[in-house]
Length: 82
Length: 139
Length: 89
Image: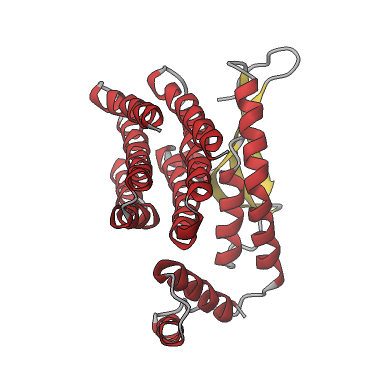
């Protein structure tokens, strides 16, 4: 399980690296969305590992609330670019 | 009917969130489902929405199959733009479910809904494993 | 069994996120990101569900939210990143 957690953190580093490089704003949005769902999943896995259900609740809420802010930001950017 | 469906959906979310099936909690959930504002608009037929719901449910195993196909194809993929007939654009639940089913599968992403001469249709971007000779990619 | 699901989800994560680093068309990146984030994370949640079946309401809620939100997020990003004339076509 610890190995799995290391793998997940390693996968999380990929979109972070993408964000740190210069790239277009849409690439950046996609990478941030990916980071959001990965972090929520890592929270859930850590919660299961430690048997701590408060942490699991946090992960579940952040998954089900989703990245609504990113959706609004994407719509806003499209209107601005037009 | 759509009213009943949305109430049932909210009740389902409430019971999942609280994980409690006692009478008081169910009563609170029913009250909340009825009291929260509902979408207004013309009456919407039920049967196409149920069919679309079914299609988006079976899209989940289909999506895993397509993901495996994409992984197996390695780097040889072809992109294309296709169009597919859509449901009635005034029927919002139907459109939402259709967009969900199409975008969930990794081969296709919906790019927009437009009204052409042949009725409403989706503009879809498609990524498929390539078979046979390589073709020109349409931008 | 649970470890199998978790490992498969992790493999999908790596496969789907790696193309973000390459120079490709934006839409094909989005296709692969939907594989990794929606399907891979769904597999991982299934693995957690097998491990701790007593907490299934919470995990089911997370699974539902994950699938719906990530799919709609991909759709909105794809649609908004296209120039306007494509949408009007």
